Image (tube, rainbow, N blue to C red; front, side, top):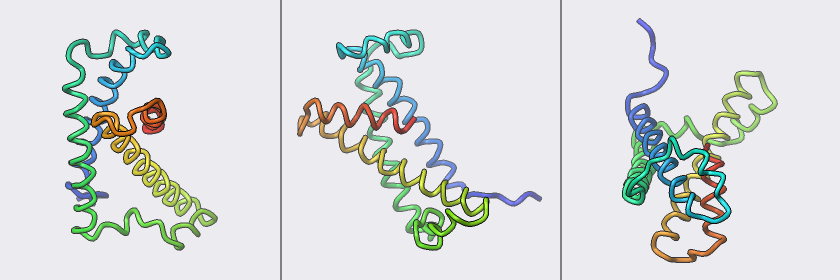
Length: 149
């Protein structure tokens, strides 16, 4: 029998995250077509949703926040936080064997994703609630969107 490399909780949370990110991306790109300097996005018109894109975008945002909280709680409660620990042993792996380098690189990418997703959630919340909702916040949201992809 083949041994599993991960657990069901991680798999479920991962695919919820992927689905919500996909919905948020497509609906967000449709919203971005309204910006004057983003006319090039109209080339993607065939794959972008057409009507009432704000509702799925907000629903995806709620799912993303919920999955972020659930993942944090899940990692702590299941004692799996070592999996993403960025400690000195892991950092020394950058100059170690190939497998250690790949593991360290994977953890660094994971933390980069966490930071970028946090920037998306905060900037999206600020834009939605009108706090600091200026060009700078739009830029942070736009750049973080492309960084996630």
